[in-house]
Image (cartoon, rainbow, N blue to C red; front, side, top):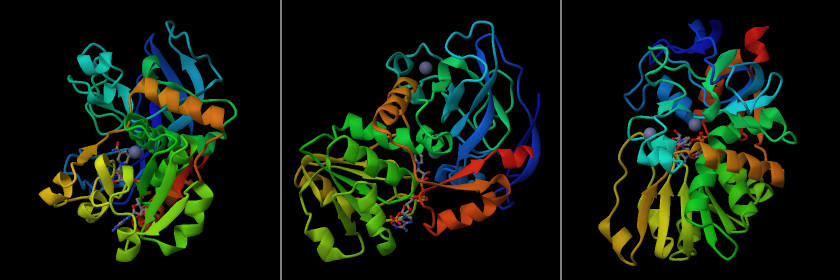
Length: 348
Ligand code: NAP
Ligand code: ZN
Ligand code: ZN
């Protein structure tokens, strides 16, 4: 099926219109007319080949929410007209030990990511949500709680699950002191989730202008990370810190804030390696860890948690044609707190 999309043709060219092909739905597939697609910083890293793994052209977008337009004959959980969502994964082997544990993102045979990954069904590379429709296996298609505003729910599919998953795994609960570093797309959801899970939530930001928003979003305390005295006041006191920063920064400054056996979990991907001093980890014994999105079952759990608790993202709705400008603003930390593309602008 011929499908309108926006793509980058090279690491230095702006995103521009392009036509792609989508497969006709297989018996186990769901076809979705995309209403909204969130703009993740990973889209920008990929479009500009900042991780050195992009094959061009690339159609980014993995925070996809829309309405079902066709279902294959074996599909049981979706019908035409339903809201449906697709996140960062569209397939995996479904048989390896990781898939068996619901950790499809770590599929040992190679998960199929929503964009920029080899498409094992149609050949070529997968194309993301900056497009008018997507066809996805039912098993990788998510249900969207009906009480959530669809545009504001779209970024849950990456920013939401990427912060929810480590908060759950490392036990952000009542009585725990949890830090979130960076108030961007991921960070603002991290603050909302840590607060909703009952943890004492502390936001670390470089932007003085975000202090009031941090509190409004659920932070009990906000620390300006450039202020060494303010940082030192929290030394050795955290049970968990989730770091969402997309740029180079000093990890040792955050490791110093952890208690014995507490963890700093990286979800942001700075462009270069970040030096860590051994003493930052061994006195007292601390953990430096990482986390990648979340599996399909946990993504559905997160969406249902949002439905039950009325949690959505704070967004700025843009037209598809504003995407290059949105990328520039994202680089200046000028997003409150996620751009979401209204896909009607692509179809109109
Ligand atoms: P974003 O909206 O651009 O937010 C990043 C935030 O980092 C900014 O808002 C800013 O917060 C802070 N920041 C930016 N430059 C900084 C600097 N030089 N020093 C310190 N802080 C700085 O990006 P995002 O979409 O949330 O994504 C964040 C990172 O996570 C990206 O690298 C992305 O690729 C990665 N990611 C990872 C996963 C995963 O599965 N692990 C999933 C999605 C995204 P303040 O203004 O508050 O300081
Ligand atoms: Zn993402
Ligand atoms: Zn697998």
